[in-house]
Image (tube, rainbow, N blue to C red; front, side, top):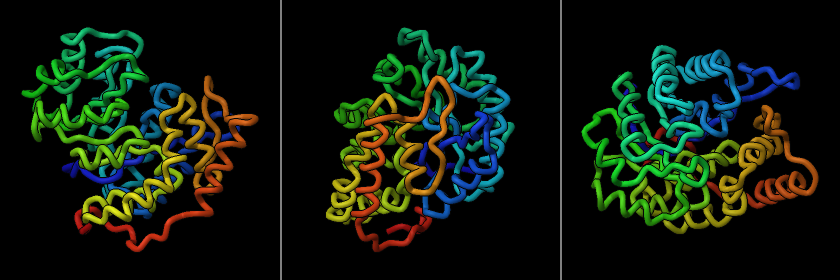
Length: 309
């Protein structure tokens, strides 16, 4: 599949049983429901998919199950989040064999590389696969910034095509456009600055809270595309208390709990994470219930983005 890099790509959850084994059938159900609700692609095995808590065999099983249930309806992009370049190349090649349509490539975990080392990591993975690659910039989480000087070393790598921008400073979107024009497709990666990002040149959104409220997420992005800014702002303002959860340390637990409250998935997570407890759990439940009770009226049914206004 040739990826149309635009629209809403939720970072889908990996569903877990009580005994901490992976529930592939329920993971497939969750993904299928998101596609039926109109999302434009899925990110398998991102942060919300608990990539780094899974074994290599579990990751391959999850990705294969997602590719199977998606069945070509939307692109499947998988996270590449590994300690070193050799492991990243190995997973990228395994993902390509398993049927992934693209990769979301992170910096090396743990080690903080210098600019030339980071560029070499990205170029090394890109050279080992034919899949298109979205780089993932999230300095607060991973202590590594994909600066403009790194991107200068990547402009001639043809299959590095997009950037998921999760730095909290929205000026990055303008700096990237000024520095590279349309060379890299920009995606918003931090939920609570998504609307600003869309107006500053992002073409899509890699989203966490879409897992709980997919139709509202899709309609908000569609509204920006058709110029219905009042509707986009209405949804964004309604959504914002929940979108802030994506910027917190416990985002995975919060998003999976939101899924559970909305009847879409389970809050179970893999250690070292544990489900939210006490006042924090009550707070997130109350936020989700309040959002569910005050949902904005949506006028547009979910449609493929190619048919959107």
